[in-house]
Image (cartoon, rainbow, N blue to C red; front, top):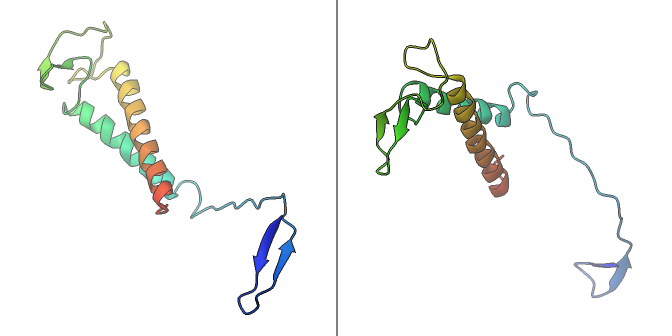
Length: 115
């Protein structure tokens, strides 16, 4: 049993604790414009853009031990009509990385109470 204390009296009285918890449902501006959705779109888009422009490792550009991007052979064997050689493997890999980064941002902001 939980105890309740009155601020102006020295008496203590038992209070029956409820086993039901309240469920709070919040929709800030709808799903499409929600803060969580914007974070996920921005992080995934940034990762895909970085890989497409050559700033992140792809099938065609491998990273060395010194974290330098060097032009290499297409190790996956996937062909692409894209001028920079961006393949479906790169799209899936960088989309996944963007979602991981976005989930980390959302969980971090929820953890500090900013979201």
